[in-house]
Amino acid sequence: MALPPNYAYRADAAESAFVERALLYVETEVYNTLYPPMEGMKYVPVDTSSPEGALTTSYRQYTRTGIAKLVTGRGQDLPTSRVFVKEFFHRFYPLGMSYEYTLDDLLAAQMSSQNGGPSLNIDMELAKAAREGIDRGLDAIAGIGSATSATIPGLSVGVGADVGMLGLLNQTNASTYTPATGAAGSTLWSAKTPDEVIADLTGQYAAMVSSTYKVFKPTTYLLPINEFEEQNGRRMGDGSDETVISFFKKIKPGVEVDSWQYCEGAGSGGTNRVVAYQKDKRVIRHMVSQMFRQMPPQFQDFTFKVPCRAKTAGCVSSYPIGISYMDNI
Image (cartoon, rainbow, N blue to C red; front, top):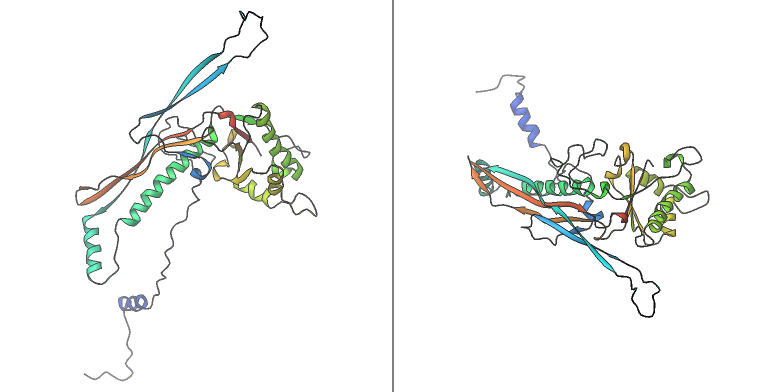
């Protein structure tokens, strides 16, 4: 049949959509949702020495007392040394996650592969998500244990019920250092001169060394991100090529200075907190008896469910005096 004169072909909406889809270029790069870096295991040494089946972990603390004195020649007045032992217990708790996929998901993946389509590993991305979920839970515990915080970004929900586990930023027996009030009448670094900020950092360092009679010295400082970035780009003075952070590291060689998102709002009253500590397993360690384990898939109602878990006792400090907090900076 001949087409009438001046005939114009008009595609309907469905056909237009098909043409548009055919002309669509799909980038090969996959863009995942980005989350803040998980740095808890970087800043808190991880101790995996406990067996996976352990319900609790404990350590003993020995205190030796006594000092020699001048005695008589017969030695009948010799002082006696003594040893006292304390034992501290910490319970392991499971941290759970899971992922699941249906029987139809598997069949669709198989059909796609057989028909020349992409070979889909249906559970790989789901397994990665579960692993990342476990890691985020351990990261939060490295910060403040099983507690929650309305002022620390990302920790308002927490990891479940508060069972008393502690993190690096809320050790109950850690020491505290009060920053000095600057010439502008404030303890905030934004209102202080570079020299006043240096005085706070060195003062916190000296306080730990002095109070422990040189038994402990800070090896690591963690600052809120904003304060770290500001002081890391702030010159000590006109004509100086040293920033506040680089100058502090210069006068305290070997001390690591970095930032951690959890320091924001971790201080008393929701203020920002600086933590200075000796990064040593004796001072602080994250007790993890099981890092990440996938259980066998469980099939029920056409769905495969894969339970995953880790086990942790939180951050344990045998010497909390090796940790110092400075708030309201």
